[in-house]
Length: 133
Image (cartoon, helix red, strand yellow):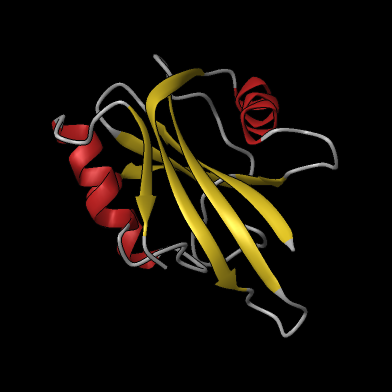
């Protein structure tokens, strides 16, 4: 089973960091695959260090999902992060979170937009939250 870490990185006015795998592609969340013997938190820290941000207070746990290819299934953790400055992004950028979430390439979960909204508005509790696949 593949294990992925996604990042909801918010800028100072709740802009969301997106990346694009190729020019003209739909936006996607920054992500990394969890390495063998690495925890989800360690994988998220590795991803956040590459993007220069501080961790947020909430994490969404998504159980076993069918993978986007016939190769198998995957587990996903969506970590929140914050940055004080909108740093340049080589292949992607910063967009209002309400606008970008419906257009994400390979949506992680239908509940991701609700999770982001609840996090930004303060009604998602700190800690781990499970989203149904």
